[in-house]
Image 1 (cartoon, rainbow, N blue to C red):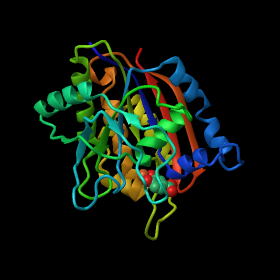
Image 2: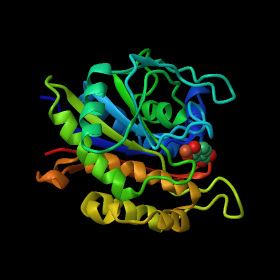
Image 3: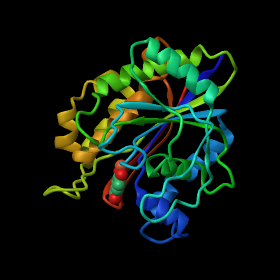
Image 4: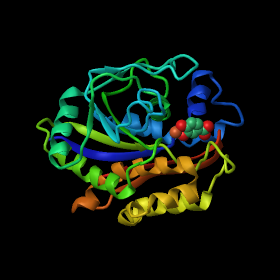
Length: 284
Ligand code: DHB
Ligand code: FE
């Protein structure tokens, strides 16, 4: 059977993608940020998964106000990096895993989570920047990736609790797939940031670090944070953090198993307008 061996959490700031693509990672502004991911890139090599289930949000790239799926699972064989206005990022295409993705869709929908099934879409910085941070600049991404898009852009957005429960359903789905695949689940986006309005530029280090603590040790309490608290404390785009709860809900300890091990924790400001947070949790 397939199994989840680790969860990874990371911000997805688009300027990080540009810094990588334009060869600026050693510049004084960026160097401390990329230093925090050195461990992670080695860890990815040492713990290469067969599939990454990548929870992210689309930023009005593949979807728009014309279509707003709350949860969308990619079941396609491949996905192209999107052109977000400056041309597509020079990164490899994303190879999917239609077999596992359609099994997860079947299982999770039968568990009462209404997913939108997507057979064709381009993937934006929400998905490609986490891959770049974790994998560097390879010719091809190290494994297939199942894109799982969450609406955190247009209200109403799903609650943290619903995301957490969905993570549990995803774990059950993975564990009932009849192939011995090693699966990582990634929760991406966040941490505190607000890109518009009078509070543009908001960063809340205290909230972010308390969220990291809670996510590790009291995941149920993290899941209970109401969306208004994210907006008040972490800014309008801080709501992206609910996506981390999908990955956390898929870990063993909240499904009757043992606590995960914190393999890596990193927090850094500044990076564009966003506080960058990053965690790697390994199943024991
Ligand atoms: C920034 C952060 C985001 O999450 C995003 O989607 C776009 C921009 C930023 O910090 O600039
Ligand atoms: Fe974003």
